[in-house]
Image (cartoon, rainbow, N blue to C red):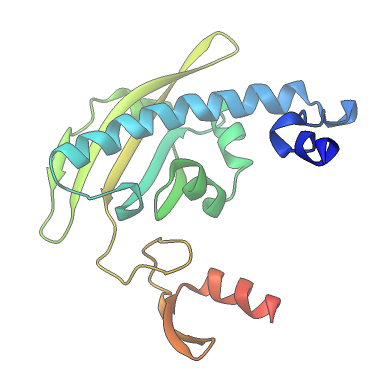
Length: 180
């Protein structure tokens, strides 16, 4: 009886990862992307305060950065879906501009006829050097929200799942199909 009481998950230590899993360069790159995430979160919070969005998944992002910059190389290692997951938005992509285009002051925030946009200029440090980035965030299209990932995608459509019609995006629908 006493053995069973002591065999509680809270009494066990978390297993240590194998040493070959350690990758200092990857950890550094991910740290840089977490810095970018903090800057994106500040823009999204501004949009929430101004009631342009309800939550991050109600937004889409374009990250503009100088062509050929180290930050561009690091961010490009992520696919668009991974970037959207990292920033907790419905859609994210990278666009490369000339350094001169990013030197000009941004337009601030603008409001279009069907969507609202916030544009913010910032810098990200890589190896001690600062590189400009421009964050363009706008409200996601008023499409249905996927019941599985909660993202607003144009591919979201009703799918028959376990006897019910459920709105799923194409990505989640293919995942669930592979599990059947």
